[in-house]
Amino acid sequence: MAKRRKRGEGSVHLRKDGRWEGRVVVGYDDKGLPITKNVLAKTKMACLDKLKALQKTCSGQPTEKLQPDMTFGEWLDFWYQNYSKPKLRPKSQLDYENSIYKHIIPALGKIQLSKLTANDLQQFYTQMKKSGRLTRTNIYGEGLSDRMVRACHTRCLTALDRAVADGLIRINPAADCKLPGQALKDMNLLTREEMQRFLIQAKEEGYYELFLLELATGLRRGEVLALQWDDLDLETGTLRIQRQVYRANGELVVSVPKTKAALRTIVLPPALVGVLVEYRQHTNSRWMFPSPAKRDSPLDPATVRKRLQTILEHAGCRKVRFHDLRHLFVTTALENGMDVKTLSAIIGHVSAKTTLNIYTHVTDEMRQTAAAKIDRGIGKCEPPDDPGEGLPAKTFNPPSKAPFAPYKGKIRKSGTGCVTQINDHLWEGKFSPKWPDGKKHSRSVYANTEPECEEKLAELIRQMKAEIAEAKRLVSEENWEEAMKLAGQKKARGAKKMV
Image (cartoon, rainbow, N blue to C red; front, side):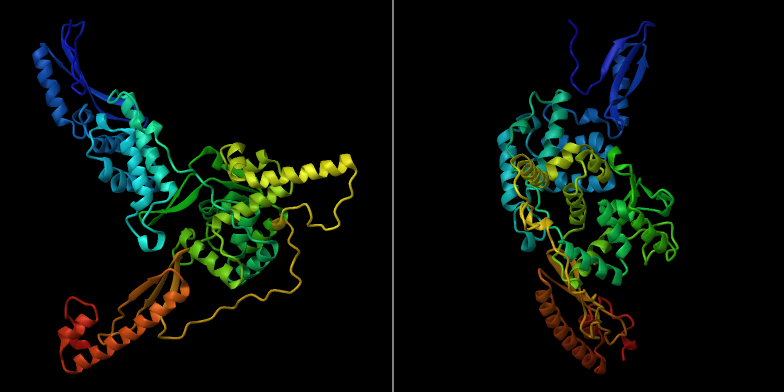
């Protein structure tokens, strides 16, 4: 009986022409299929020598890593680099690398792959929930979100499934782990009156067409910002969604959507088409919503997010996310009788089941309303006098009688710095005064609320003004080095130019 070769050493066999052939796996393609190379020799020993030399010359080849006693960290790295990464988009690659190299491998990477247990993984998930956060713990707490825990579990589960398929382990220990529930976020929807004020304020600030299109179509933020004028047929009112824009590694990336369902064509209402026709006369770009700062570039998603919060604040509306505007469109469409299958195609869901899972509360209310109508029809009951009775409270919003005057904006006084909202939980205050060297040196403070940020900024301004006064005194005494240290510079080059 022939001796079986170890995993990763390749295979050797005698060909019909009398020569020996050795073959070994040197990598994997984008589909995860193995890539092999072969050597030929007249004798078996010569073939084995050539095969070993081939393995050494093939850099990054898996035969050195695929060993029964390899660690979980080694396998996870190999799985990501060879099986997963080639199929991922840049932004998804960042998400995977963050969970794998910052959380999973530091915690579980040294455990031998064959000895990894479900208990090891379960303890890791529990620790992540309690104290797994590495940054911004003062804002979000020490524990990671349920979503991040589930993401780490998905990476482990998929990598270990592949290890089972490759024969490195017998069973997948991640299959029996218990995870935190996948709770859906509450939908924070604008009322009818708030929506009217919001659009009036958006028109005042130059974002009317963007948000009107969003409220009428429910597009994803990346989809609406990636629209070009060639995507819109003004005669038929059809709009093609065929790309998306997002930020990865600090750069804007324009690409095709992730799923085929996201590649779709929708029909716009005639009134909206008329608004866009008039809007196009004032734009000189192929992008429907171009960036005012960069040439031939769409609007930055972060810019739109910040502008949305500013408009909501000026309009006196509650704070909502951009994605909540998408929820508002879907909820309105369902409440006005649009069938789920058609709606699912419009918003780009893979199936109607996805739409039903996300908007279960809306469809439940629709069923209750339908049951009440059937009961009135069968029992011949009188309809309620109150038009809001029997309907969900948030769907009956009488229009506001008082006209809304849009906020015109105000300019901060010189010397008071600026305050910017970075996200829902973080504000930045910045002060950039001119120092005695004639240059501006900026410093920033951060807070969880705008009032707190204003207080910290005021204290920073007082401190920096005192430092500037001291720097001027040092300049007058020709103490250049100390003056430059106050200004935050490492070198005193050009210090004598101070006034």
